Structures are given as structure tokens and as C-alpha cells.
Image 1 (cartoon, rainbow, N blue to C red):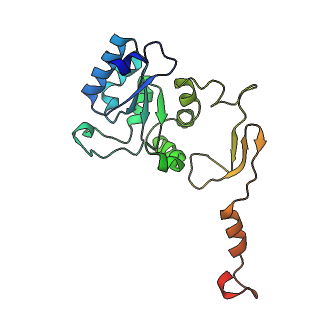
Image 2 (cartoon, one colour; image 1 turned 180 degrees about the horizontal axis):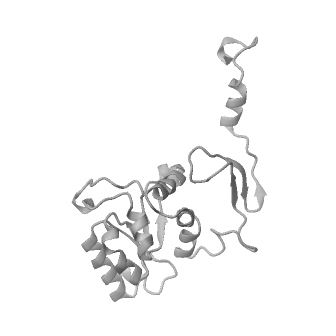
Image 3 (cartoon, rainbow, N blue to C red; image 1 turned 180 degrees about the vertical axis):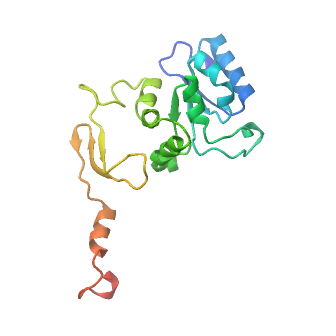
Length: 199
């Protein structure tokens, strides 16, 4: 209870990992009783209580690929969880759920689109929505006065076959040369008189 008290009147919401529908309902009720702003992480069965979450303005951080009932808490797992939550009016955030898989975030958002989430909502779920839910101020949207972190893609950013053509961080363009691009240039031509180790 002492830990929960710290979130009363705090600027950031309490994030609780809950998957089972009835437990999500209990957590929402607890947060309301304590006057705490709440975000559900996981929410495998959140689609079953989507109206309750929308009514209490509780955002849900979902894994769009979490469709396997890995435990009794997740028997109601389904691929269209994010789409069903969005249709009910719940603010959806998309996460890979593991920091070492954050590079798969666009793929996860693309999978949510493939399973019914509108494209613009999926993009917001990895940009604007997290910034708004966690009070990050002027990030997550393109607007005058906002922090200038921009990625220009070769195509649809939610397609895994696209790549970043230009990247700006804090208003400065980042050089796009990397070890991978240098290796590509080095081994693009395997002919000629290069030593065997370079072919």
C-alpha cells in the first residue's frame, strides 16, 4: 500500500502487468478507489473488458503477437486484441514486451494492422500515444516547437521490407553509414583481383 500511495496525484501512471479479464477488472477498481492513474501492461484478455477500460480511460500496452494461451491467465489470447480494444475506445500502446526485441516494434505494429487495427492508430500506438500517456510533452508528433526526432522511411514504416533513409535526432541529421553499410559496400562486388578473404 505504501508503494501505491506514491502514485496518488503523481504525474505518471502506475503500470501493472495483468492478463486475465477478471483481474484487470479488479485492478481498475483498485486504481479508482485509490485515485491512481492506471495503465495495463500485457492485457491478453483485455478485449473481454474493453468497455470497462474505455469507461475508466485506462490505456493498454499490448503485444500484437501475443496470441498463444501460455498460461491460465492468457486463455483468451487472440491476435485482434488491439483492434477490439481500439473499437471500444481504449487507447492502445504497442510494445515488444522485451527490451531486447524493441527492434521488432514496427513489425508488431504492422501485425496489429494485419489483424484489424487501423494503420494510423497503429502508428500512434508507437509514437503519440506513449508520449501522451506517460506525459512526455513535446515528443511523438510532428509539430512546430516539438523535439525534432524524425525518421524518413523508404516506404510504409510498418512494413519490415522498408528501411530508414534519413534519421534526425534533436534537430541534427545522423550519418547513415554504419558497419552494415560498410560491409555491404565491401562485399557488393566479389569478383576482381581482391584477395580470397574479401570474396
